Length: 349
Image (cartoon, rainbow, N blue to C red; front, side, top):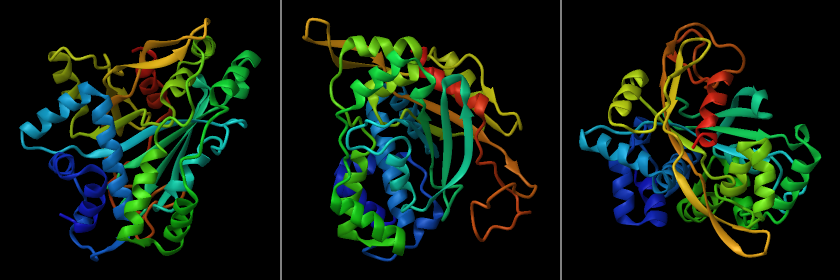
């Protein structure tokens, strides 16, 4: 095991949870070599992804049950990507609007834009980011922005009220370390341990409790914005890369689990996805009489993906600088139709 990644995760998780995570997850062969005490951007990216996946397992019981079965048969989960939602809107308190709150973290970690996906039915835009040091083995991020200006004035006002007290979880020290990481590509172990704990906080809800009436206004026009209201920038879903997503889909149906009826297939035919419906969670709101209430709402979910290999030259920017355009590689793209269908797993919960 890479001692640097171990030191990072142990600092945040402790021994037992760290060991469970390492037993569960695929870790790139690249990490078999390391420089003791000097943390590269790739090592920090890997540790963050593992930490965020651990969070999904805490919030998504059905995903945790599935992964326990994976471990039981001696296999490992290949984390393909994590997805999260943002709101491109002024008035988010101290939090930068839209994906800027997240890309200021991803870029120092070695992530680069790999695709833009108009999610017009949802009035959102999605963007995928790959980690350029090892794009096929280090999990991608799929970051979406919701556009309130495409909704009604009442909806926009509710967005402002719900998000106005958002705080910025990144401390000045963390911002300084991110700058150093982007400049040098590495940090000391002590710096990286401090930064990792702070970065995890960025993938949570940054605003406080809001009114049930505002939640209803948001829900009436956008299940996605209603989800952001309760869950914030937490992972909307994490995705397991599997060999045969059709076989997984049928097996989960046989077990009686709430998985999509049909597998989504990209226009290219190379990217296939399915998912469990979101687990329900309890969140607090303020009712019309000013009292705190608890309400069941859809939380995060667990997704599966199969990616085929493509052999032709790349279109657009090469996601790995030293990769030859004619070299066979995994299709790391996404599909707009697939994404919009998968997003509905929270709307239908």
